[in-house]
Length: 203
Image: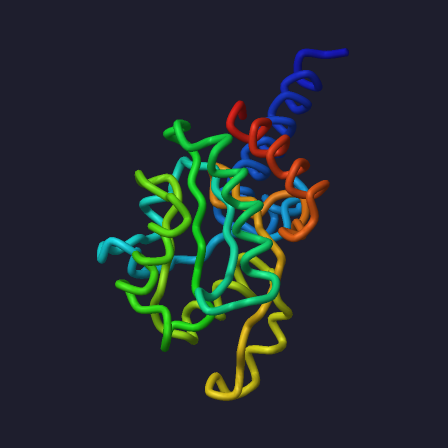
C-alpha cells in the first residue's frame, strides 16, 4: 500500500473520530442512544427542606436517585420511602451520591412540611433532599427528564393533574437517566438499584 493511500485512510479515520466526538458533545440525545440511556436531566431549581435552593449544578458529577411522593400519602409513598431509607443508609457517607425526593403536592408540602417529614424519616446531612417548587416545573421534571410518568400528560391543565407514581430514576454523573426505571415498592428492584448505584459510582 502506498504512502498516499495510508495517508488518506488515516486522514478519513481521524475525521470520523472528530465527527463522532463532536456529535456526542453537541447533541445529548445522540450520546444517550450510544450509551443506552433513557433521558437526560434538564435545568431545574427547587427549594429544599432546609430552605435552600437546589439546581442541576448542585448534582453535577454525582450519582443520584430521583423520586416523586407527597407527605400526606397513605398508600405507596410510605412503602417507597421506607425502601428509599435503605438506599440512603447504604450510601449516606458517599459524597458523590444523593437522593432527590420531589413532592407531587407542592400546595401542601411547603418547606416546613418537608423539613418535618425529613426529620420523621431520620434524615440528616445533605445526601437526601426533599424538594418543592412550582407544580408545573415539578411535573415537567417527572415526565421529561426522569420519565417516571407519561410526558403526554403534560397537555392536561396543570390544575386538573395529580402525579402519583412509584417509579424511581437513576441518574449518572453526567446527568443521564440510566438503564431502566425502577419500581420503588418492590424489594428486588430496590436491591437492583443499590447494585447499579455502586457500579455508577465506580465509573
